[in-house]
Image (cartoon, rainbow, N blue to C red; front, side):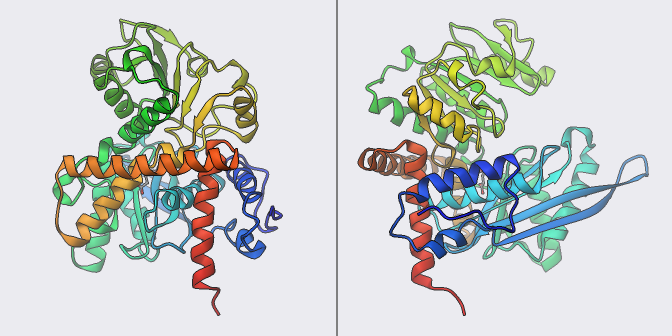
Length: 426
Ligand code: GLU
């Protein structure tokens, strides 16, 4: 049953509009779910906006705006990353929080969805300014976060050091150390082995499952193009190379590089450490960020921003598989074109769930103060992702729908069942 967009929420902005359109497509297949429950799940539960000052190194004060949205809390505490980027808007944070709800529900981990962000380009701040901004924002978040209520993590523009400052700020406020307040921390303060690599590795685990369904089992025959070379893109590239796949193109904000015979990923990473960008790497030709999406390849991994694959370029994409490392990289219009063309898309909430799965492991380890080795983390990650892929594939086959709709149906149904069982209060 499709329900109308709630009046209180604008639908003229992009990411949230995409999230709601995807929801409506899945909701059509959920005629057994009460209309009221379907409407309830469209609303973010809480939205928090904060404006706060940070003193720059030159002595001047600057104002910054930050957000945190808790989308749905039925399954447990909310979980989701913090983004530091100039592109952050309340609309984007809402969409990302909603996707976190479906992601956690799909892979069966006991969390609701949340997301946060600060409108800032972290590259324009000194380390001290970044620390001050993070600590002030974390202080503002104190009433909203706790290991039982909401657990932030890294996302675009944030990293383990930022998580360490948040953990310290929260711990100083309550008076004792609370490692489980954030995930994606450095290992020495309660982080988990494998967390940094988890999202990128998980993307490749899912890619292999998708290829296997199409009897493509020889890595050396598969050419992969990756848009975005941050934490997700670079770890996906490294793991793909380790398994013998040919990574033919990668890109970052400055642009991309292409070598049809395969790039040496460790070489590209070295070049990046030295120069700050993949661009200029010698053994490759330059390619623009949008041209990368249209290169000849078998697998395309968008691992950057939302809204990259649209009705404008969907016809030009040559890949037969799209594995979404980013959240929301494909618009619903592009989905229609690509599905029509028979491109196999594994959606974000399945393909990039490795990050939040290992975040869950980190939280569990912190709560128990009992830590696992990397092999245990990785084996458990592969088991959960493999299981989620098989369940989604079975739903897609059974209901004759694409993988995104199948994943959303499964996730929405799980949350709906929990809401229905718990009942509405009062
Ligand atoms: N930011 C990541 C995501 O979009 C990870 C969230 C987490 O680990 O809580 O899935």
